[in-house]
Length: 71
Length: 404
Ligand code: HEM
Ligand code: HEM
Ligand code: SF4
Image (cartoon, rainbow over all chains, first blue to last red):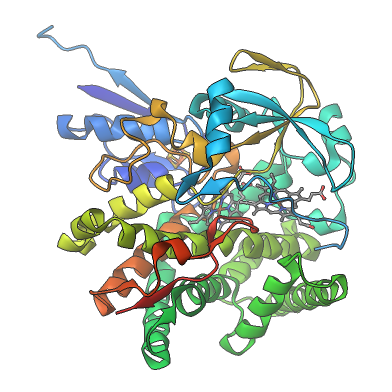
């Protein structure tokens, strides 16, 4: 499982994340900056979320591994 | 465009859909290489850095603190901030550094969000359909650049700016003239005077009576924060940045699909579902923007193991970065099945293309409508005879004769 964090302060409002993973990212109507709709996305979206983090032109998306009981 | 400013497009360096062999050979020397370039024909050469590797390009474009975009007033940029922005550069986002850039960009962004751009989708679809009607009337073979790619990017830009239909043809033709280096200075100056005069009048009209469009909305939300020169500059920048890239992507994209029948078949198997992937891979594969605004180092910086000194300039190659093996497997292949790669066709960092969502919507609409109307579209000349366009802001085609 991963946890996603975004930093609207440095977001360049490119909308790239929303285009790539609309289930997880949205854009504020007001200034176009990133909004997180699902901070803990389902496993099948993990790869896409990682791509979004790489693609983010502002480096405003961080993906963290979450501690799991099993491991 | 003032007469003394000339675009230098000798950085095109393309072959077919990709970068030329000579720039690829240069890459073998390193991710960042030094070149001697004459700033004007006949002038003494100056050293300039070329960033050719993906990581190096991302580092330079991603670091707006140590790399300045204000190449036009180099000296001031180094000393930190310029007091004397030439009037004709007012509003040209691409040449602004922080914090000026942020101030302007924050006001513009809401007009370009994915959601706001949806507003232009129905009209973009109508424009595409009208162009297709005109192609049918013109008969085969038809030039896809003149009858489709270029009218779509032009009409959508005019919709964005609020240039009424009756004025569009003249406005776009004159804009084209002012960029054509082979046209006489006098013609270009007259064309320049026409387009800037036109935009000036448009801004004045919107000041008095703002409408629902982009300029009207800006004036309503932030009217007091802009002077007319800045608004004019913003309009001018949209015209410069919003046409050639889109025209190039539509025409070259169609050629790429026609030349890769297996990939076209994947697209056409379920166009609506596959179009976004096709657009994204075409953006990467074609990387029509040759290079972003050259960046100037504000202090000494190490890039790809080399020391770039304060005051030196770096030109980043977008096509080379987007075909760097660091990006993924088999990057020289056009493959619409791959998962989207973290390419930088729209740039990277704070100057990331503000028109990205608009551009994607235009491309999506253009490819879908074209193959809906002409499922058997084909080239009307051998591919080797299709003339490529290398003398412009973006890579593209001069003509694309097609039949259906
Ligand atoms: C699909 C085609 C397009 C491509 C490939 C493209 C590419 C780019 C690139 C690479 C940059 C970065 C320049 C730099 O860092 O110096 C950029 C910036 C920009 N683009 Fe686009 N663009 C496209 C469409 C558009 C459209 C349709 C518009 C507007 C109508 C537009 C407006 C701009 C503006 C205003 C900037 C400057 C942003 C800033 O400095 O903050 N572009 N574009
Ligand atoms: C997205 C692509 C680009 C856009 C939208 C763009 C836009 C502009 C604009 C708006 C100007 C100012 C024109 C004026 O006010 O006279 C300009 C000037 C200029 N551009 Fe570009 N440009 C692009 C790419 C490039 C590239 C790739 C190069 C070269 C590597 C380049 C080199 C220049 C030069 C040399 C000038 C004149 C600067 C001077 O006189 O000091 N541009 N460009
Ligand atoms: S991709 Fe990055 S810069 Fe763009 S909207 Fe998302 S968080 Fe902001």
